[in-house]
Image (cartoon, rainbow, N blue to C red; front, side, top):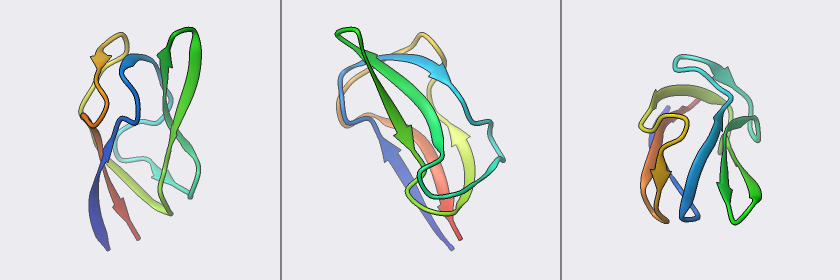
Length: 74
């Protein structure tokens, strides 16, 4: 099991959080959707595992490279 921090690839806003903390996810399941310049960019699970912690809330502004979630691959 490997714990990793997921970072935002863009500067924008957290439009919608899809997954909940503690949720078991499969690779490419959507964790949240970021919005930038009217484009919606999904943030997906990097592999099979568990979403340990969300570090942002819906409506929050995020910047490129900011930590947004902690994920444990299994």
